[in-house]
Image (tube, rainbow, N blue to C red; front, side):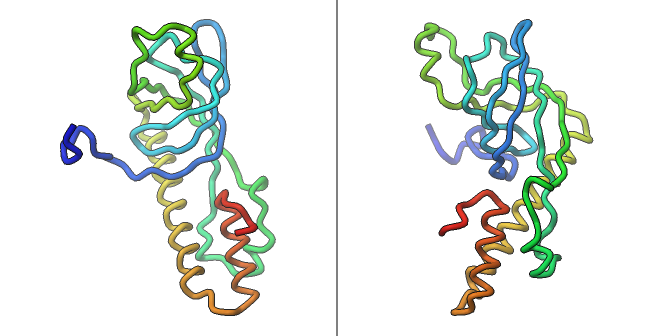
Length: 172
């Protein structure tokens, strides 16, 4: 395997995502955990079983972060992640990794499934792009807080607030 081979290179920027999604397999609806997302695909975990079909209809709960660098310290300190708006996005995805030849017992030990979106609407792609872009800008803002930390307690508290809002441990 050549790591410079374009087939093995990412085409889109990914962002961490601690959210849930629903997928349909046969006549049943299942819940999975979303670990990260990009315009091209999604990484899922904590699913009850490996789906029997390759084309998965998905409903994804997408958190809409504000751009934190545009906010005042007081506004940031009063934010609560649970109050951020969410939208539900629907699309189809195909599993990138196949599980053919594995028995049902082997499939129980599969921890992650990477899926590639297909036939997604322009609106879907735009919402995912906005999520990834905003998360990246907020991460850059967090890194700038690290750089300018110094010995100021107020700056440290702000850094902890922003880190917590982005899903990181407040106690760092």
